[in-house]
Image (cartoon, rainbow, N blue to C red):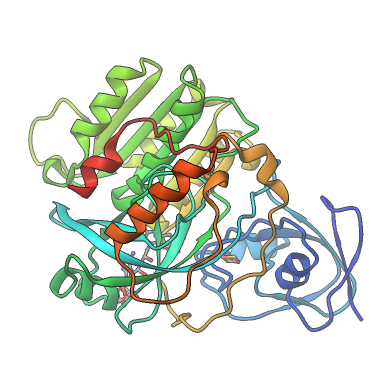
Length: 401
Ligand SMILES: Cc1cc2nc3c(=O)[nH]c(=O)nc-3n(C[C@H](O)[C@H](O)[C@H](O)COP(=O)(O)OP(=O)(O)OC[C@H]3O[C@@H](n4cnc5c(N)ncnc54)[C@H](O)[C@@H]3O)c2cc1C
Ligand code: FES
């Protein structure tokens, strides 16, 4: 039976017929991962020795040149013989329990010509780390990945959905979804999340609805580390596509160490904003970001171009955490959720809502108002454990109105 050795883990693992990722997760190894379907690239690792077969995957998640350089996707790679791998990134991804929850739509806003913002009230709090995503299932459609834009601990979940013409979920959200509808949530997933142990400067590069995870990270980081230097690049096509600026300006006026650059790729006239290709704009500033941790989210081409520019400048791969918004090519609604463990929760107390974990309720009809009342009653009896429910600002109430 093939044996798997992971550079960052002390013991070898029998893989059987499983993928590297499945074998590692089954043994409680916090192997970085996201989609588990070969689309996001979060489980990319270096094959130091041995041989694997690869199930099909998205070429954006693992390029031909990466493949020739010896990289494989752990979620797709099955060892043929003993293998030795090393995952990328100097820090360990947090593993939180994946939950399957029902939620109700509490508000829908058209925030730009191509983006809708959804607010969801989950039947139980969804514990996640800033930057992670969940899979949402609308009506009987296949699940789609969307990143949380709110800070961990907020009662209401916020998502920014870019409406893809002809896209199944996009069409449903644009034409049929209404306040009060039920949505199924599965998550959290993803390793491009804020690392609790780190305090180096942060650079966030967000393209279009990639602002969602960036916003969650900015708010969470500044809440726990108000002095931390944060630079957010928000790339959109034109002035009409800029959104959430008032909220970002409030944050920037509160934290002088937060700099926000909105970059227009097609300004179509005179503007005081930075303009051009997002990768080039970020490249021009890289000298001042040498020690930063980079978080990137949005269209895969944008994320790949910025990652390339950053690594070519000589910044280490370990400093880059990327969530390219790859297209969901398969219906994974019936997929099993990963087996999870809670190993790294201890270090996350400042960022997560640990004190709010509860046993899931029976699947009876779900009402946000009733849930809120029950929660308030329970909380008045419990002593809260340190959590991030004291959010950086008090948006969550406003969102319910
Ligand atoms: C980890 C992760 C996090 C994500 N987070 C977000 C998020 O926060 N906000 C967000 O808006 N999106 C996000 N996405 C992308 C989102 O999941 C897809 O855009 C979504 O699956 C499209 O679903 P659909 O059913 O509308 O389109 P589909 O029915 O899946 O696609 C229909 C057609 O549109 C094309 N298409 C689909 N998606 C895209 C796209 N993104 N760009 C260009 N063409 C596309 C397909 O190739 C296909 O031809 C994320 C993706 C991943 C992997
Ligand atoms: S590509 Fe393997 S977890 Fe996403």
